Image 1: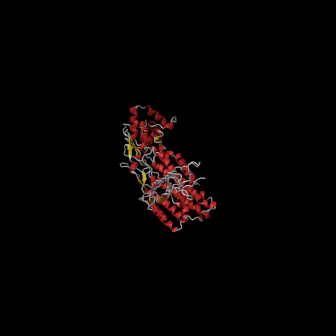
Image 2: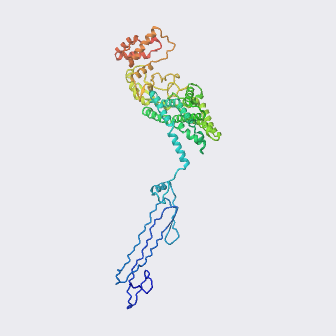
Image 3: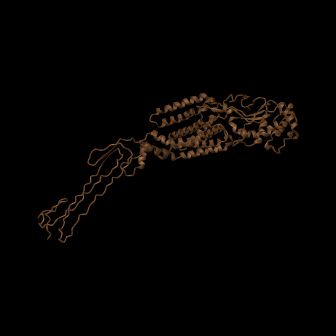
Length: 593
């Protein structure tokens, strides 16, 4: 029987209490176990950066530990010791945030939060915070997003531009332009004016019908798919739906043309002097976009599948016929070119052309799709104003360019001078005329300078763009500068990649220009005229042999040619002086070698 602890019928003493009986009472001594109170550490919580965040310190209560019962020594029951119980350390998680408005932290035992001043949220801080926050953090912010309606519009526009006939139309425009330009490369590669003119013809006269056909086919898409009623039931405005649908026809053909124009510009740049007419290139792109929009409206209104090719044919005729007219109204045709390299357009020609074509297309689109048809009047009024401006100026849209007609000369004898638009061809021209100049040098009556200058005027022009000292003899005729200066053939006609492709032929042409005279009214059927013609052929072949005439007899002139080749230097110079002084239109004055 185990004796009770304490007085009979009493319970075990509570933790921390001890009863020690008096000596001699026979009650065993009871030792009170040393129970340590667990230490509770307050977690260190960093101030989170949040708008309004109330973080409370968790309240941790120490477990109530009772003193287990013990048996007295000597009773056969071992002594039980109470183990030491420690309290685990609790660490608060680190919370990152991107913005501080009012951060409150309640300290243990207090209800007053601590606050910090707010920092403004910027795009950079929001993006950095969104990237640095870990998923699931309460302070992680979502980066700024685009409104849902704008996201949907961009998504629909991207889908419209990626699919359908739009990309194929751009590729077709590039192929058409490049094939056309490649086949006529000798006609434009070397002069910016020629490049711009031929690009305009290829873009508008060939790619214009293509843009109209693509727009018409795009406009009839909803009718072919029977989705018109479904689209009409959507909450999106009709004009907005129409703008999204017309985007491929209005954007892809101009994009293809601009890509082709960039390629042609890169091909021309090493060989041409000056720069392209960028305003006209932009006006051509806007005209292509306008044709696409007009074709789209026509496709919405004409419920007929063959409408697209028929409209393309009508567009080709409508753009080509005004180029043969001679009235101020022809300048409303965006496909009209200007074949005169010594002119440049007035600064407002390109912008006025853009307003004219874009105004017509915008008025047609608004009249079809806008809720208020009256909104089509402003673009229509702008187009009419631009049309009045273009037709009123007429041929004055192109003005003489003295910088283009400026002469650039070498230091040879005779000197060779070309205009500034062909100045990169000057070394090649001088080399082609080197042999001819060696025979003419020092001969009495021989020219002292070869000059290339403005020739035939542009459409409707009555005067030529001339540099100081240039005298125009007659419209459409070569320009001569004084009695000792001779006209050069157009070097651009025989140039290829910045050089004269056939120097011998060019020198032969120069001799023909040197001895050419207006002999209208002369009877060439007389024996004297036939003899003078034979002498002229022999002199031309002697000074600059034509390369394709090798082995071809000159019949009557063959005898004169052998005599000329048999002369020594002094005899040939004396004969050439007499020949230059003679009136070649009077057969009896032509000297026979």
